[in-house]
Every structure is written in structure tokens, then in C-alpha cells.
Amino acid sequence: MSNPLAPSSLTGKRALVTGSSRGIGADTVGYFAEAGASVVINYRNKEARARKLAHAIEASGGTAIVVGADLTDPNSVSAMFDTVKERLGGLDILVLNASGGMESGMEPDYAMKLNRDAQVGLLKAALPLLAEGSRVVFVTSHQAHFIRTTPTMPEYEQVAISKRAGEDALRELIPELDARGIGFVVVSGDMIEGTITATLLERANPGAINARKEAAGRLYNVSEFAAEVASAAVDPIPEDNTRLIGNISDFETEA
Picture 1: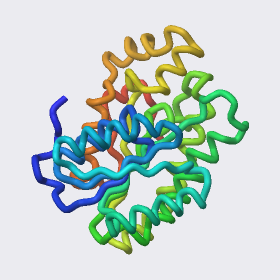
Picture 2: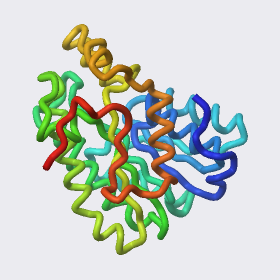
Picture 3: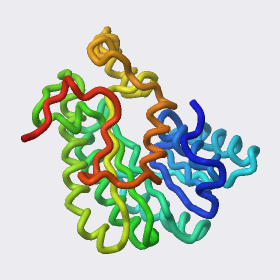
Picture 4: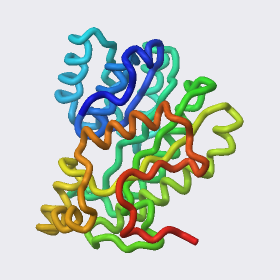
């Protein structure tokens, strides 16, 4: 997938993408760096992958810093932003990409802690670093965005509910963001082939991803969807603050 951003279009900009050691987050960081942005690669427990990505960006002449943080821990988030302030001085783009809830061994309310509470806490903690004219992008799925009107597969339901709760809570901050001159966009896509979520769903419900692919006609891959996320950081903001990617014919919109 070619970079949707023009060369040097983000020169002088600073971007942080949560959960960017792999998958959609890693490709999004790559697009930003190729366009000239200084990037922050955030990880929870994949430090080696994060540093490998940073080295690749630096080898291509870019600027990348690696900061580990548990987004459900306010102290860890605060330390991450302290590092960002020290190294970059602030942020122009914040992509809320990290999510979860299907991992084994987590507490029962982990999905809500990460997908709602942590997202709101992280954005509030980032506000002092976000310059006027900056952009916040929240990454979600159609299965979560439309969960109030369209049921999803049982294995994903709790994650979908928690991500929609996170989206709703973030939208409540739009008036404050507008007052600060900060743009906000939700990017929603169908299931993405090659993501950890797709892998876990397939493991829990063999055949689920192929069934969804047949119903949708096609599913975006990681690099294709990351290109849409990167574009959302610079494109004009839709009137409803929502960028829907791909086919939504199987999803019932709210009245």
C-alpha cells in the first residue's frame, strides 16, 4: 500500500499512536514518519517490536522515539507524556489505536477499563501537549460503532460494547476540544484481516472471519486500513466527526 500522505507534508509535526508496535498502529506510524513527522511508538509489552520499527524509521532518515506505557495505569500514562514533552515538546497528532479485551487472563472488567476509561484518561492527560490545530483520531470497528443497532458475534460483544462506550465518552469531550482548536475524528472499519483481534476471533470461532469477508464482499488488510487512519489525521473533519471505512450495508444506523 502506498503512503496516502504526500512526502514532507508532515515535516515539523509530532505524532503519537497508541499500540503502535505492530499491526494497524505500526503501519500508521510508518505513514506518518514517511511524510516527515517525528513519531512516538507506544507499546505495552512488545518492546522489541517497537524498537525494531523505530530503528527502521531512523535508518530511513526519520525521527522515532519508543515509549512503553500501560494505558490503564494513569501513572504510566503520565510518565509517557513527560517523556514526549521532554523529547518533542508537544503533539500535533494523537491516534487512539490501542484496544483489547479478548486477551486471556485479564480481569472481567478489563475491556471497559482499556477501551473506555483509559481512552478518556489518556486524552485528558494529553491535552496540555496538544497544540491548537492538532488532531485526535479514535480507531474503532463497525461491530462496535453500530453495536446498539446491529448485534455482533458473541465472542466480540463485550469488546464492542466497551469500545462504543469509549467512543461515546470521547465524543462528550468534543466541545472542550473544539474550544481548544483540536479536531476529533472517529475512524470505523469492518473486521481487518491480519490483526490480533481477527486472529483471536478466528481462534474462538473458526470460520468467523471468512464468513464476515463473504458477507462484506471484502475486508481491508492492515496497511489499507492504516492508510485510512493516517488520512483521517489530516483530511477535513466530517460533519458528524465520523469516517466510515468500507461497506456498511449490513449495519443498521441509528434513527
